[in-house]
Length: 354
Image (tube, rainbow, N blue to C red):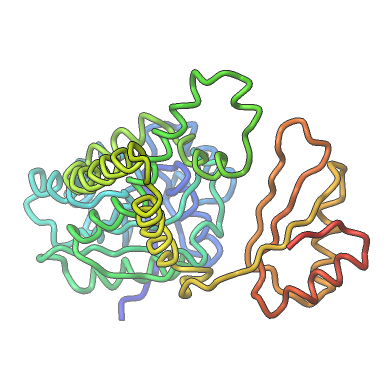
């Protein structure tokens, strides 16, 4: 087993690079911070993600730069060091192809992709626990050195992630399904709101917020991501186009119920396949709705009262519709604990609906 000793050089101190630095700092691993933007590197250093001045040759280099530049930076690091090189890009085919054009030997390069992030970016958005419990894909190619693969696995585990190994092509199709396509669908839905009348937006509830939340990501960055994964996305978008045509035909019928039900049912079938908490299989939960006054301290009181019930809250979300003086907190729990949660909250004066 290859030991992660360090130093680890991180090239690119945005959200992902800085978070990797912070995670490794928890273990005392020496981290070198490199960034073409000196302000980003300085800020990452100031918040404890590593140092801009490390004189020791790195054992591992992590490339965390925008997708268009990954392959060139990987090749440069392979040329300049004897270290194992990995990257954190969300697409693997293009960086590998670019690196192969620029480097004679890519055996020390192993692609990887931590499946964690945020709509925010930059070093100040970074967190040491960003990868705790997250999936981290490792994508060796046919000439990757097994010891290099093992070292990248050690990196992911040191950051708190669980690893999954897959081919470059399989990874890119997988992220197209679970990340890139949802982002495009969210962007399309959000785009219809750009010129919507204000009276329509006043009807907004949690549903539209759920669907459009990820559309707030940086358009320039996402242009690079989806362009780099165009082959996988094209096939999926053609499939979606076929389903849209089917939906339009169904809506044009006087008796569309059966066809619409089939289309919506397919959505349910897909949704329940999404893994649940901690990667466990999907489980059906019951939602308990609690009306909460819009005053300081009310959320803390609700959480304390819920904890007193002994029921474990598996998930939650807050709906704050425009113009309402109260909000609604949705607490999701397992069916067997609904009654004890409802009884405890009702006894403490909360307005509860199931």
